[in-house]
Amino acid sequence: MTTSNYTVTGMTCGHCVQAVTEEVSAIDGVTDVSVELQGGRLTITSDQPIELERVAEAVDEAGDYQVTPA
Image 1 (cartoon, rainbow, N blue to C red):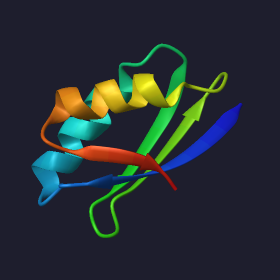
Image 2 (image 1 turned 60 degrees about the vertical axis):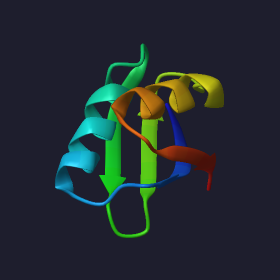
Image 3 (image 1 turned 120 degrees about the vertical axis):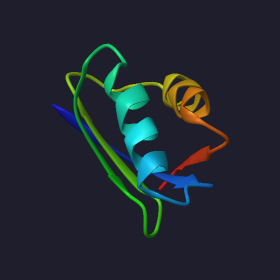
Image 4 (image 1 turned 45 degrees about the vertical axis):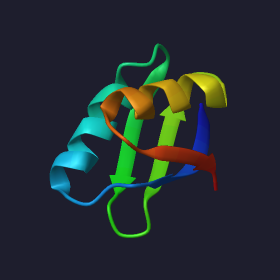
């Protein structure tokens, strides 16, 4: 298991959190996702490391948000 932490900017409400959670959860190999609105913390648990590009694509698909490694 691997845990990765990121910062997501641009989220303003619970719907944003839900959208990011759903899109990131759909990435192959992801087993758990935690998104905190305050502070924009995104924690991903996966079977193996997930490339930042894949995470960024999922976050972008969720809405107008930006993701950076924490």
